[in-house]
Image 1 (cartoon, rainbow, N blue to C red):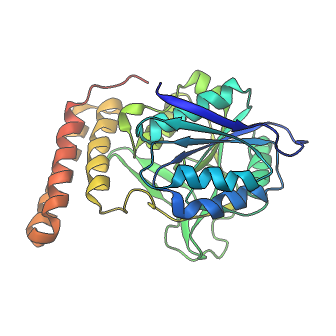
Image 2: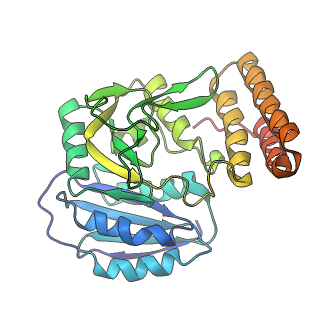
Amino acid sequence: MGMKKEENLLGRKNVNAPRIGIVTVLYNSEDVLSEYYHSLNIQSFTNFILYVVDNNSPDHSLTHSRELLTEVDFKYHIIVNESNFGVAKGNNIGIRQAMADECDLILLSNNDIKLKGDTIQKLVDGLADSNAAMAVPKIYYYKTNKLWFAGGHIDIDNGTTRHRGIGEEDIGQYDEVESIGYAPTCFMLINKSIFLNVGFMDEVYFVYYDDTDFVYRVIDKYHQDLIYIPSSTIEHNESHSTGGGESPFTLFYKSRNRIYFMRKHLKRHQVVRVFLVVMLKHIIKYLINYKKSRVAWRQGISGLREGIRLKIDKV
């Protein structure tokens, strides 16, 4: 597989059940790791193992992780990949290791987030109370009271996802526990049985839409519930490692994977319509601001072309 593993299995005494395997993928994460690891170290729920999957990050994420993790009380594994395998495969590597270590639940986690001390405990309690397969917290923009995510759904006709409440000040308007149709996997607690029955992340995506595809399969094809637990909260420093929503990298993979997702799950006429709509949007951006948008335009169009050519993975 092209990876090696380092571990500390001492940790603090664990008295809580179930056991959680927290999987986080390193890539250009150096600046956010101190706060992330610290917020894990203050959790009231302690029965977890952190799986740090390094995707050959070009910065000092791995070195910094090794230094910071000498100061924590929780158990951890460090898995070092020889190249950047992408978020989907990186997550799968961590998930498989967590399941091999007999973790009952898998918590997929970005590392550009900050947790409260009771974030994991409330998520675990909410999952148990609802008897659901997956649970997610309320998510704020970093260091604000503005919502980034308070529930969501997949707009399947357009191959996009919608976050409820995005950009709104939180005044308690989304404080009910409820079943939802979509959430990103930046902090998602999942029963291990889901991976046994539904499968793992589709590695063709590399980054972006891998979570959309996974959630769609779980909810729409296997009819399992995803529960929103608003008492559990995190802050999210969005797109820290990928350069933001308008970077050439992001535009390429979002265009590519949107088409691939639709080809995988929808009918041909729906795919053709979305392909034309997305191409038109890229052309309009290009015409409005040629110099600023030409690189992005090329990447977006290249992404669309590759999305059409990709072989469909039946995962």
